[in-house]
Length: 278
Length: 273
Image 1 (cartoon, rainbow over the protein chains, first blue to last red):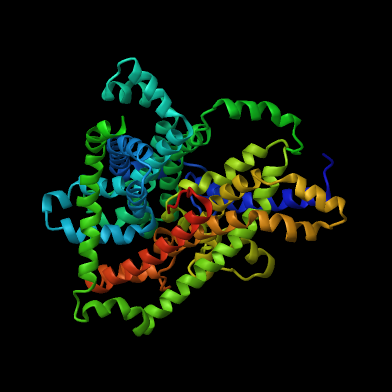
Image 2 (tube, rainbow over the protein chains, first blue to last red; image 1 turned 30 degrees about the vertical axis):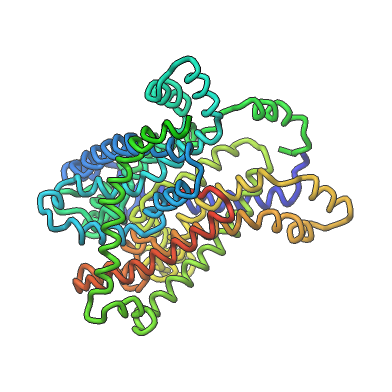
């Protein structure tokens, strides 16, 4: 295709948008290793701020990792069976349950955190443990797990697979564990990446629910932005980026499960022949 | 087969049902009750209309979210259609860059806006060099607008690209061969085809902006956007009833927006931040 003026205009525009998104990221990463941000990079590079962040806030990083892994475990145990049941039952009740499950995404974290504090704040031991934050994270991430698994389930003909297995004498649990689970791996993987990423970055709920002893990474970040010098905040942000980057890269690679059925493979083959100027 | 399986399905769904009831439905029900338990009773839910401060904050939050949504849709449409239609070197890198901020928490986005428009930000440095005037906008409504735009563009762009993929190229070619110019094609062919996608992603964008707390928390120390008002009522004034009522009204607004989005697009896209 010949490059028109419109092409170069759109390209320039898109590059501008990218610059808007990327420049502050690069600035904050640089600031995190600069001796004096006010004087700029010429003041020299240092790991001093990173070390300072590590000494002050490493606990928040470990807590965030721990909560996200626990959150993943819980959402796997709860989410996969729920998605399966929702895929099997197509009636009105199933749709209403689905609508309910999505509510924690729709209702602002602030409101959910308030509700949990009002209801369970009185249970002191629970309130001051990281389990309290875990509950919030599970509510918030569960819909994403259910949805990823559900998306794959509705794209494969799992009922035929199950009937085949059943006709060979496989009972319900055998079918669930040996036929269904292996076939929805891609959805489970996509959902897991989503859950971990969202849990590590969750702030809205966590800020309301945390106690001085249960600070997660984003809570620590907010803390550092408010009370530390800009280099420390930047170094902390740098650590966060380094943690989240591999997850995001993995999400780009596996986040959009497109299980190939015969029709799709066919259209893929036909694509170069079609008129699309891709 | 299905009826015999029902007991198994109930066993599978039971854990989620218990957890969800105990930690979501009951607490939210209690929140509704608390919202109506203040000195004003259920009338607390009407304070939006009766108290000028809340009404103003609701209006400014809605205006902010709506304008962010419009600009995000425009920006994302131009770039999204461009990236979906053209194949060139570095394309997938640009897409990665544009979707990278999806997973940033609101506080980090607030901090990035400080990097752009704060006292030591890049815009201030450039404007200082050019005009001798340091332009600082991070802590104003403008800063919030830019911050909300920052997290909205990546969300919208993915939906726009998905919608563009389904376009019928033949329609455009027909229009062109009939002599339509570029603007006529955009107005009569592209926008109508994109419309469901625009509504769907716009609603998600709007809902996310309404409830955004992290970004506002970092930037809006002096601005009364709704999530900040709720937070202040709860922490500083310990005014449970108002905080509960306001957050439920906010939840209702975002839920309606997301409901519209899903009825237009089927499956929704991630709403976080």
